[in-house]
Length: 201
Image (cartoon, rainbow, N blue to C red):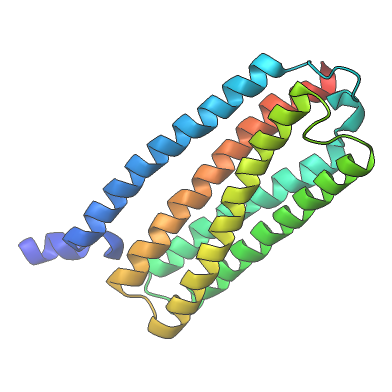
């Protein structure tokens, strides 16, 4: 009976280490929520304080932002498919969908870097005004997190290719997926609270 219960659990939950690692990562995400909550609060306080610099409505480009959002949300979906394949025991499926997730994540980063370069060329930088300082710190912090996630995902991709679907790789990939979904949720708040409001106010 106990064996059946154990086998009914997803592979990443079948060891005590796996359970503790996942719980510990949820605690880590709580700290990350506090970090981004502070950055959003700062951005809200400084919203509109552009001094003599350009306004967000003048700088934000709806098309680019929508493409970035679509790419990142799609990467969250492909990350979920990677977990699905992992739980099926398909190493090939896991690797394919994880690789697609990483390509999408790197594409998002490329667009974000291009956006920052465009702003800089237009004379808008971290030092331009209080508003732009808050904007660059908030979106830049998210971008740094995505960069870290992409590097982490590449290492997991290599490990999964070498070792296949095991309790260890499953635990690591599942935790990575939690992290990636978290970044997507943060981006939804950035898309809504920063870009959409900035375009219309």
